[in-house]
Amino acid sequence: MGSVVDDGKKEALQEAHRSLADLNPTVVFVLGGPGSGKGTQCANIVEHFGFTHLSAGDLLRAEIKSGSENGTMISDMIKEGKIVPSEVTIKLLERAMLENGNDKFLIDGFPRNEENRAAFEDVTKIGPSFVLYFDCSEEEMERRLLSRNQGREDDNIETIRKRFKVFQESSLPVIEYYNSKGKVRKIDAGRPIEEVYESVKAIFAPKDEKVNGHRHTLMECLILFWMKWCKN
Ligand code: UP5
Ligand code: MG
Image 1: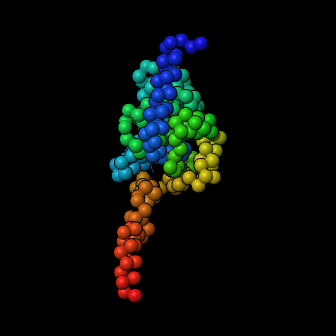
Image 2: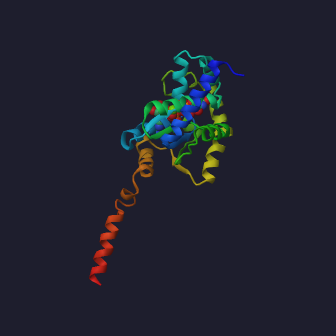
Image 3: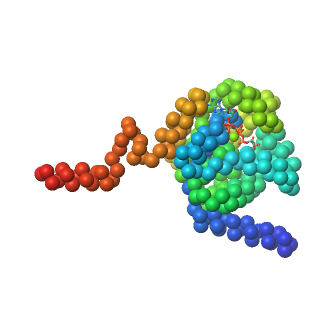
C-alpha cells in the first residue's frame, strides 16, 4: 500500500494527464543534433506562428537551478550527454503545457529515444502533428557549439562528442520511426539562419499562401466555378 503522500502525488499526476488530453493541443516535435539550430529556429516560429516553445533541455536546466530533489541526477546526466529518464522530462513538459494554456506547442529536443517517444504518447495520449527535423553535419554543429559561449556545462569537446553519439544511436531511430509514418519534415540546417528559416516558414505557412505565392481558397474556387457555369 502506498503512503498518503504517494497516493496524493499519483492522483495529481493522473489529473494532469486527463487535463492535457482534454486540452488536446497541437504538438510539433523539433528534433536535430546538438547545435543544429532547434532553439534558434523555434524562436522565429514563435514570433510568426503563435506557438509556444518548450525546450526539454531548458526545462531540465531550470529544474536543476530550482534546487529540486532530481537536480543532481539531471545535472550529472547532462554533463555526460545522457538522456534523463522519461518520467522526469514528461512531467516537466506536461506541467509547462498546462501552466501555459496555449494549445500549440513546439517541443524542442524531445523525444530523444524510443522510450521517450512511447512514454509520452502513452501518458499524454498526444501524438505530434509532424516532426521538424534539422539535418546538419557534425562538423558544423561542433563549430557552433564551441563558439556559443553561454556557459553550458555540456558545451565542451568531450561532452559534445558524447552528445553526437547519443543522437546517432538513440535519437535518429525516433526520427526514422516518424519518417515511416510520413510525419517528418526535413530541413537542411547547415545553411545560414535566415535561409534555414525560409524553409521552416514554408512548412508552417497556411497552404493558401504557399506555392508560387498563390493558391485559390475554397471560396475563390466556388466563385470561379459559378462564373464558368453562368457563362455556359
Ligand atoms: N546557430 C544556430 N543556427 C545557426 C545557423 N544556421 N548558422 C550558424 N549558427 C547557427 O544553436 C546553437 C548555436 O549555433 C547558437 O550559438 C546559435 O546562435 C548558432 P541552437 O539554436 O542553440 O541549437 P540547438 O539545436 O538548440 O542546440 P542545443 O545545444 O540546445 O541542442 P541539444 O539537443 O544538445 O541540447 P538540449 O538543451 O536539447 O539538451 C541538452 C541535454 O539535456 C541533452 O544532451 C540531455 O542530456 C538532456 N536532455 C534529456 O535528457 N532529455 C530531453 O528530453 C532533453 C534534453
Ligand atoms: Mg537548444
